[in-house]
Amino acid sequence: METKRFKNWWFLAVNGLIFILFGCLLLFFTKDEITSMIHYFGIIMLAGGGILLLVGFNNIRKDKSTALIMVEAFAGIAVGLALVFFLQNTIPLFLMLIGIWSIIIGIIQLVVIVNIKRELANKNVLLINGLLTIAMGIALLFNPFEWAIIMGKIIGFFSALFGVILVYFSFVLRSVKNMETNSLS
Image 1 (cartoon, rainbow, N blue to C red):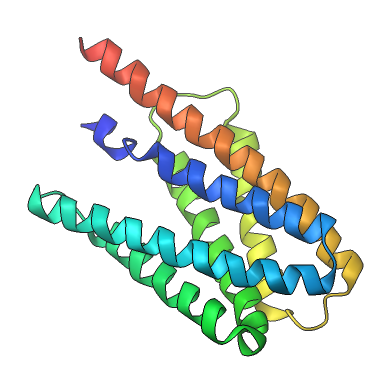
Image 2: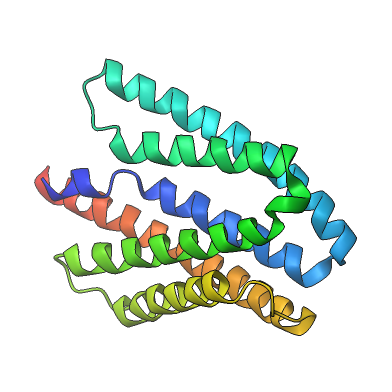
Protein backbone atom coordinates (compact mmCIF):
# COMPACT_ATOMS: atom_id res chain seq x y z
CA MET A 1 0.00 0.00 0.00
CA GLU A 2 2.81 2.41 0.84
CA THR A 3 4.55 1.97 -2.52
CA LYS A 4 1.63 3.70 -4.23
CA ARG A 5 2.36 6.84 -2.22
CA PHE A 6 5.86 7.20 -3.70
CA LYS A 7 5.30 6.13 -7.30
CA ASN A 8 5.54 9.71 -8.60
CA TRP A 9 9.07 10.31 -7.31
CA TRP A 10 9.90 11.85 -10.69
CA PHE A 11 7.57 14.78 -9.84
CA LEU A 12 10.00 15.93 -7.14
CA ALA A 13 12.95 15.34 -9.47
CA VAL A 14 11.42 17.61 -12.12
CA ASN A 15 10.75 20.30 -9.51
CA GLY A 16 14.35 19.96 -8.32
CA LEU A 17 15.62 20.48 -11.87
CA ILE A 18 13.44 23.60 -12.18
CA PHE A 19 14.95 24.92 -8.93
CA ILE A 20 18.44 24.24 -10.29
CA LEU A 21 17.65 26.07 -13.54
CA PHE A 22 16.15 29.00 -11.64
CA GLY A 23 19.21 29.17 -9.38
CA CYS A 24 21.60 29.15 -12.33
CA LEU A 25 19.48 31.81 -14.00
CA LEU A 26 19.89 34.12 -11.01
CA LEU A 27 23.57 33.34 -10.56
CA PHE A 28 24.88 33.76 -14.07
CA PHE A 29 22.67 36.22 -15.97
CA THR A 30 22.09 39.99 -16.02
CA LYS A 31 18.71 41.64 -15.50
CA ASP A 32 17.99 41.92 -19.24
CA GLU A 33 18.98 38.32 -19.84
CA ILE A 34 16.84 37.23 -16.90
CA THR A 35 13.83 39.05 -18.40
CA SER A 36 14.32 37.18 -21.69
CA MET A 37 14.83 33.90 -19.88
CA ILE A 38 11.66 34.41 -17.84
CA HIS A 39 9.78 34.82 -21.13
CA TYR A 40 11.19 31.50 -22.36
CA PHE A 41 10.52 29.96 -18.97
CA GLY A 42 6.87 30.93 -19.52
CA ILE A 43 6.89 28.96 -22.77
CA ILE A 44 8.36 25.98 -20.92
CA MET A 45 5.70 26.34 -18.20
CA LEU A 46 3.00 26.31 -20.89
CA ALA A 47 4.45 23.16 -22.42
CA GLY A 48 4.85 21.49 -19.01
CA GLY A 49 1.28 22.41 -18.06
CA GLY A 50 0.04 20.96 -21.34
CA ILE A 51 1.95 17.72 -20.75
CA LEU A 52 0.57 17.45 -17.21
CA LEU A 53 -2.91 18.09 -18.58
CA LEU A 54 -2.49 15.17 -20.97
CA VAL A 55 -1.20 12.98 -18.12
CA GLY A 56 -4.21 14.02 -16.04
CA PHE A 57 -6.66 13.11 -18.82
CA ASN A 58 -4.84 9.81 -19.27
CA ASN A 59 -5.22 9.13 -15.53
CA ILE A 60 -8.93 9.95 -15.75
CA ARG A 61 -9.32 7.33 -18.50
CA LYS A 62 -7.54 4.80 -16.28
CA ASP A 63 -9.62 5.73 -13.19
CA LYS A 64 -6.56 6.97 -11.32
CA SER A 65 -6.24 9.93 -8.99
CA THR A 66 -5.77 13.18 -10.95
CA ALA A 67 -6.48 16.06 -8.60
CA LEU A 68 -2.88 17.10 -7.87
CA ILE A 69 -1.75 16.66 -11.47
CA MET A 70 -4.69 18.69 -12.83
CA VAL A 71 -4.12 21.50 -10.31
CA GLU A 72 -0.46 21.69 -11.29
CA ALA A 73 -1.36 21.52 -14.98
CA PHE A 74 -3.75 24.46 -14.78
CA ALA A 75 -1.36 26.41 -12.55
CA GLY A 76 1.50 25.80 -15.01
CA ILE A 77 -0.62 26.90 -17.95
CA ALA A 78 -1.80 30.03 -16.10
CA VAL A 79 1.73 31.01 -15.05
CA GLY A 80 3.05 30.27 -18.53
CA LEU A 81 0.41 32.45 -20.17
CA ALA A 82 1.10 35.30 -17.75
CA LEU A 83 4.85 35.13 -18.35
CA VAL A 84 4.55 34.92 -22.12
CA PHE A 85 1.96 37.65 -22.66
CA PHE A 86 2.31 39.99 -19.65
CA LEU A 87 6.01 39.72 -18.78
CA GLN A 88 6.71 43.25 -17.49
CA ASN A 89 3.67 43.18 -15.22
CA THR A 90 4.34 39.65 -14.04
CA ILE A 91 7.96 39.77 -12.84
CA PRO A 92 6.93 40.70 -9.27
CA LEU A 93 4.08 38.22 -9.55
CA PHE A 94 6.53 35.63 -10.88
CA LEU A 95 8.75 36.06 -7.81
CA MET A 96 5.75 35.79 -5.52
CA LEU A 97 4.53 32.67 -7.34
CA ILE A 98 7.97 31.11 -6.95
CA GLY A 99 7.66 31.94 -3.25
CA ILE A 100 4.27 30.20 -3.04
CA TRP A 101 5.61 27.28 -5.06
CA SER A 102 8.60 26.97 -2.71
CA ILE A 103 6.33 26.94 0.33
CA ILE A 104 4.14 24.23 -1.21
CA ILE A 105 7.14 22.09 -2.24
CA GLY A 106 8.65 22.49 1.26
CA ILE A 107 5.39 21.43 2.89
CA ILE A 108 5.12 18.42 0.54
CA GLN A 109 8.67 17.43 1.51
CA LEU A 110 7.82 17.64 5.21
CA VAL A 111 4.62 15.60 4.76
CA VAL A 112 6.48 12.91 2.81
CA ILE A 113 9.27 12.78 5.42
CA VAL A 114 6.71 12.32 8.19
CA ASN A 115 4.99 9.55 6.22
CA ILE A 116 8.13 7.53 5.47
CA LYS A 117 7.87 4.45 7.66
CA ARG A 118 11.49 3.38 7.37
CA GLU A 119 14.32 5.12 9.16
CA LEU A 120 16.53 6.93 6.67
CA ALA A 121 20.07 8.01 7.45
CA ASN A 122 19.59 11.34 5.65
CA LYS A 123 16.18 12.22 7.04
CA ASN A 124 17.54 15.27 8.91
CA VAL A 125 19.11 16.69 5.73
CA LEU A 126 15.79 16.28 3.95
CA LEU A 127 13.98 17.89 6.89
CA ILE A 128 16.34 20.89 6.84
CA ASN A 129 15.88 21.20 3.07
CA GLY A 130 12.10 21.25 3.47
CA LEU A 131 12.29 23.94 6.15
CA LEU A 132 14.78 26.05 4.17
CA THR A 133 12.62 25.74 1.06
CA ILE A 134 9.67 27.08 3.05
CA ALA A 135 11.82 29.90 4.44
CA MET A 136 13.00 30.87 0.94
CA GLY A 137 9.40 30.87 -0.24
CA ILE A 138 8.29 33.12 2.61
CA ALA A 139 11.14 35.54 1.88
CA LEU A 140 10.19 35.72 -1.81
CA LEU A 141 6.50 36.01 -1.03
CA PHE A 142 6.66 38.86 1.43
CA ASN A 143 9.61 40.87 0.13
CA PRO A 144 9.95 40.50 -3.66
CA PHE A 145 10.69 44.17 -4.39
CA GLU A 146 13.48 44.97 -1.94
CA TRP A 147 15.78 42.14 -2.91
CA ALA A 148 19.05 43.57 -4.13
CA ILE A 149 21.25 41.92 -6.78
CA ILE A 150 23.34 40.22 -4.12
CA MET A 151 20.23 38.71 -2.54
CA GLY A 152 19.23 37.46 -5.96
CA LYS A 153 22.60 35.73 -6.20
CA ILE A 154 22.15 34.23 -2.75
CA ILE A 155 18.68 33.02 -3.69
CA GLY A 156 20.15 31.60 -6.90
CA PHE A 157 22.78 29.70 -4.97
CA PHE A 158 20.30 28.30 -2.46
CA SER A 159 17.73 27.57 -5.14
CA ALA A 160 20.28 25.51 -7.06
CA LEU A 161 21.32 23.81 -3.80
CA PHE A 162 17.68 23.08 -2.90
CA GLY A 163 17.17 21.72 -6.40
CA VAL A 164 20.09 19.34 -6.05
CA ILE A 165 18.79 18.16 -2.67
CA LEU A 166 15.26 17.83 -4.08
CA VAL A 167 16.54 15.67 -6.94
CA TYR A 168 18.44 13.59 -4.37
CA PHE A 169 15.26 13.39 -2.25
CA SER A 170 13.29 12.12 -5.25
CA PHE A 171 15.79 9.31 -5.79
CA VAL A 172 15.61 8.45 -2.08
CA LEU A 173 11.84 8.09 -2.51
CA ARG A 174 12.41 5.97 -5.59
CA SER A 175 14.72 3.67 -3.64
CA VAL A 176 12.12 3.39 -0.85
CA LYS A 177 9.59 2.29 -3.46
CA ASN A 178 12.05 -0.20 -4.94
CA MET A 179 12.96 -1.58 -1.48
CA GLU A 180 9.29 -2.07 -0.59
CA THR A 181 8.49 -3.63 -3.97
CA ASN A 182 11.40 -6.07 -3.58
CA SER A 183 10.37 -6.94 -0.02
CA LEU A 184 6.84 -7.78 -1.21
CA SER A 185 8.17 -10.19 -3.84
